[in-house]
Length: 512
Ligand code: GLU
Image 1 (cartoon, protein in one colour):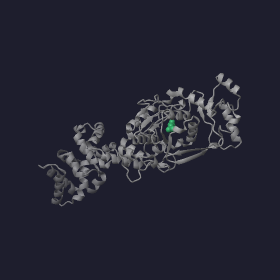
Image 2 (spheres, helix red, strand yellow):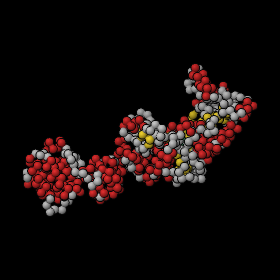
Image 3 (cartoon, rainbow, N blue to C red):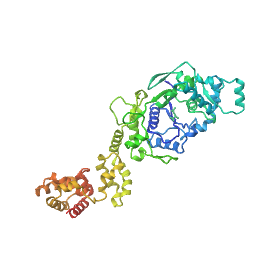
């Protein structure tokens, strides 16, 4: 490994939107490649035409782009091993399947669907725990191991449909090293004779995956735990094809679990608990079913990268916030956990909140102004400087920019109703009188800074025998309509003298 260039690939099948577990796999490949000055490849494994979903490949590429973790070689960018879509490479695979047949490690099988079904039934009747086409059952099936050479040849020449199956040895141990899991030992008696090449002229996932990893000179296979059971078969394929010396190192990532730790994180959990499990919005082209994405929900891409990085990998200290550069620097496969990582929706929001707080007010103003323009048409809705000031005041109260409007709409539109509870408790002839006087004081010839406003507020209260604490919240309600919100005196300063005085006047009139 020492002098082997790092080349890793993310190899999704375009069967629908990319689950965030898949995004995390892509991210770990990306981080590993960057860390080792290697190459990150995007390969599309679309050999199973029945499961092909239009738009899924574009979705995957767009998701990686949005997150800033695009591959530098592959379907989008091209590269020395193009094409990178397996359906376009389909003519390359038969040769290797043939090589396996010729060396006695694979065989032709001519069984029909009905014959396979009959075998399954027979085995079930005989109480075989897991009926499968394997070292034992293949002896009673229609294949080139049971037929004579002549019969096989005739069938092939007659164009009878066939598949090519691997011939799994009956009684061997397959051992391989996984960077995350250590040594993995599997007995071949638990493996079946998987189909490598299908009757439709396409390879299966297993053959295409191994052949492409070899041809593309992949150094490390970093993929989800669900592929661990396939790994022994892949190891045997490397061995039988004579490629064991260049076999990639394996790293099988832990599952992403539901928040309660009970099973794999699914779209249903997301729908139930109100968080996305996909990077971008998606609408199924057949069923029309919609799934929501992190992007449209208002997450920052870097926040998603940060939170996904920590779902399965630990930096070895308590640091939680990482820039992408820091992640690249700190990442290592050795620090990826074996056990599943629980997804915590509140923590996900927390990450976004941290990124929101770090984001410059100018940037936030650009994003928020889009919402403001949709909601109000006043002159302030296109005043970026003013919106920047609003962002400064309300960002601490939000997890997402799209919450800003609910928190701070009063900066653009005067309230049309006032918090009932506070009014009932505090509004009376004395306080009404106080606000009448305060309004006169505030409209005087003063610089309208938050310090001055606060001083005048306090002085007017004292002069009128009113405790400032008893009218402070009421003041907020008269100006914003709400009982709680951002720092009051700063809010008043930003709204400006004219607006504040006008709002007090409106309140005095409306609240009898
Ligand atoms: N095509 C497989 C998938 O959809 C790739 C597994 C692998 O990386 O080997 O995840």
